[in-house]
Length: 191
Ligand SMILES: [Zn+2]
Image (cartoon, rainbow, N blue to C red; front, side, top):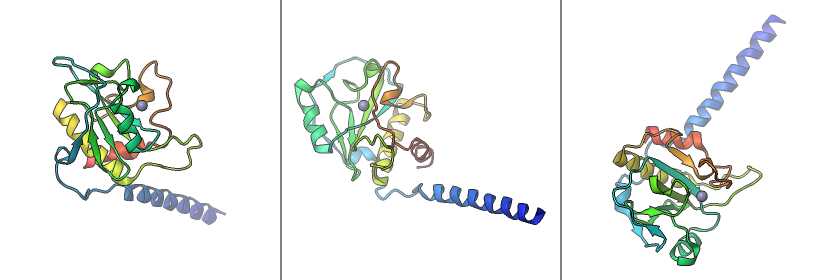
C-alpha cells in the first residue's frame, strides 16, 4: 500500500513537471526577425484621434479586432467609425500604425489620454476552446509593447499592461477569453 502511494505521488510529481516543461516550450526565446519593431511598421493614418500636447502615457491596452486586419484598418480609416488604435498586429505578425504616439487614439475611453492602444487580429470565442492568436502575433506584439514600455518608462506588469475589458467601467469582452496573459507577460520579461 505504502509503495503504491509513493508510486502514485511520484507519478503525480512527474506529471506536474512534464506539464511545466510543456508550458515552457511555448516561449520562443529567439524571435525570427531581430530588427527593431519600429523599422517594420506601416503607417496608415486614421482621422480619429485627438491632439494633446505632452500627454503622459502610463498604460498599454490590449484589444482584439473581432474581424480581419484589413477590415479593422478600413474601419479605423473611416471618420464615421469614431474609433482607432495606435497599432494593429496581424496574425502573421505584420504591424500597422494608425495614430501617432503623441496623439490620443480612440480605443478605450476613459483611459485614451494616458494610454497606447494595440489591436490584435482575431475573433472572440465565447466557448474559450480555440486560440485564435498566433505565436508570431504574440511575439511581434510583445516586442512592440516592450519597446513602447521602455520608451515611456511603463512597468511591465498587469497594472500597466491591461486588456480593454479591464478598464474600469468598460463592459466589453475585448480582447476575448483566449488572450494568454501568462504567456504574453512571460514573453515581455524574456525577449
Ligand atoms: Zn477593445
